[in-house]
Amino acid sequence: MRLQVMGKRLLLANVEGQFFLVQEMCSHEDVSLYLGCLQGKTLKCSLHGSRFDLSTGQPLDEPADEPLQIYPVRVENGQIFLSST
Image (cartoon, rainbow, N blue to C red):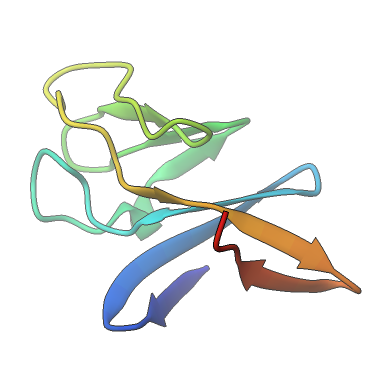
């Protein structure tokens, strides 16, 4: 799911009930990761095929070499919140 929070374009992924919030744009090219492929906790960019670990933001394949910005989230009473911790 694509979101915009405080002017930032973010991507929210639900992996078996665990939520991950990362920057929407690939760190290698300015392309949306929304069209990428999600497999477990790994998100693959549709442009060059770089994969990212959603829990750390770290790139797993070239050509990406910069991590994605990740944002902590918490779930309370079925609602998802951007966490301050």
